[in-house]
Image (cartoon, rainbow, N blue to C red):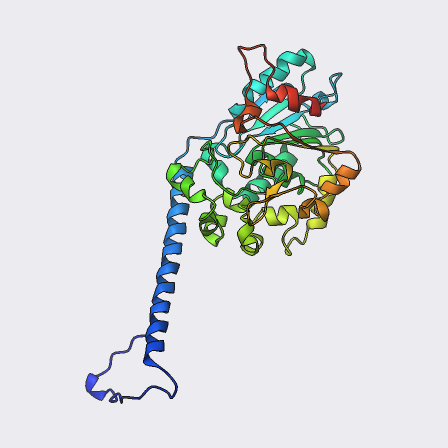
Length: 372
């Protein structure tokens, strides 16, 4: 509080000498260090605030979300396994993506199986820049949506459905699976080019939706500054799975999704339940490519990563597998886990269909067989 006083009534300040053993040079140095630290903290705050606000602007002014794209019946009776062995399929797009990205794939399946094609829905609950919202919030909304609309989506409680996600959508789909109660079962889960062990570096495809200026801040040397803080974690999805191995303690403490999802965090109180939920999946398929031009490191999609020196680390070395934090090792031992690297394929190859070509698409060759 500020109080007004008569200057004449102020006690006279007396000069004091420095305490014994104190060098005035030390005080000057300490003062300069304090100023430098203050300037650095202000810079970091400004850096993060600018980053987050620009991302928020892009998110708030994105086009209106597409409606969910659907093919096939929508009654529970239609959800029974048909002669093709295909159950209803739910598709989930990646960051800055749209439900319409799966339209060609759904047409392909429809053309291939005709009247025996399964019910299919490409969810458009958070299209475009909306997908930059924090993933824990997106996950909870998706869980509620699936539970509330299972019948309308043609999903039978006992038969369940197949869940296919691309890029961030594959990671989000797993987050949903690990929270779904027994009332709703995922039979086959397919993750295509998804950052399952995190992202550490720029997406060369420019798929983040943040714009070139902000994407530069996703470079490895500075990404941890932009993402490991309260502001970014509550505004940007990519911050929730940014995994910088050089700042592992910050990752485990600050990232609000991946440490809890993969079992890195000591605060994962419901990890046992998440593992139980994931192990209800009949088959889990993780697909990726060493030629991916967005996921960084590329084989994060199949739980391979790099250490603090940039050296490659294998699945078997990962905490997720070695300690079986959410069920990967158990699934492997039971023959229900598939991890495949298909070299030479770019990030968007997984959802492209060659309509004017007789060449089969990557989806038809490498994904569709897993859904039978």
